[in-house]
Amino acid sequence: MATTLDPGSLTTSYGLIFRQLAALTWQKKPWPPSRVARLLWSGLTSLGTQRKIVHLLRAEPFAELARKKPEFAFKYATLDYLAIGLTAPQRAASFLHHYTRLHKALPVPVLRHMLQSDVTLHRIPTQALHCAITMGMSEPVENEGEMSLNMRVDGEIVSVLSFTIVPGPVVRSRAEDVVLVTRVQGVKGCFPQIQATTKALCDVAPAHLLLAALQGVANALGITEFAAINATMQRSTNLVDPGLRFDKSYDEFFCGLGFAQTPEGFFMSPIPIPDKPLTCIKPGHKIRTKEKRAFKREVQSACAAFLRGMHPAFSSHPAA
Image 1: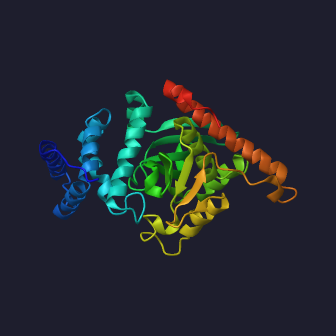
Image 2 (image 1 turned 90 degrees about the vertical axis):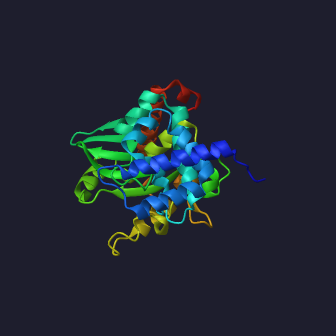
Image 3 (image 1 turned 120 degrees about the vertical axis):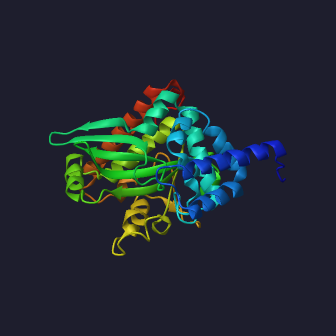
């Protein structure tokens, strides 16, 4: 059934969208008119969702962020937002769903902290390195996911996993909430640190530890399904050195974890990610495999426990 918008409400929504776009033109570095026009078109073609976004951004701490960064309300309008191939309504719905979900789950001071700087979820003590997993808004690459989990070694980020909480239909899921992973990447120039970190942390690579941490985040929020993009959907595919193998970073990574690929190209998995049966592990590797799995479960539980400690609402979701 078609939805009929109230004329007064429609006029107000148009006015709010125009005011937001006008704010972009008054910045120190004004946006090109062509880009503003594209944002306007995207806002008007997704008017119902844009109205909800405008309403959400009136609430703190989003209102504060929108005043500082007027483009925040329209970041979903870029064609490569989150993943190549998503429609404008899917991008808008993902943006709205992510921040609505966090606004319901987190108290304003905690959410404000996450929007302004990283929060340390878990510190991993080692003899040689100071390792920590932090979470915050994705920066400086903002279109590859709304939030990022970062592996920091001696204070420096060496590996990043970016994600967004999207509505199930965006990835053809029946779940109400799905954690969509859109970026898994080691920081350029940090390969030696990544190698050293892997060796120091039970031979578990930072990407795998960040995925374990994300399971803890999802568990604290009561989310039970993962989705991940494939290599051709990654927005940087056409922007990087053609010699780089994005299929190894995405397709082989998620296939190796047992994610199933859908006809639309997404990799899907329940949370927690099922372990391969030990009968599939090569002889002589089983003890080491058990140690690695126990370490990842420890990281997962620690991240979930940290979030539960931040707000009583998380306590209703049992640990995995």
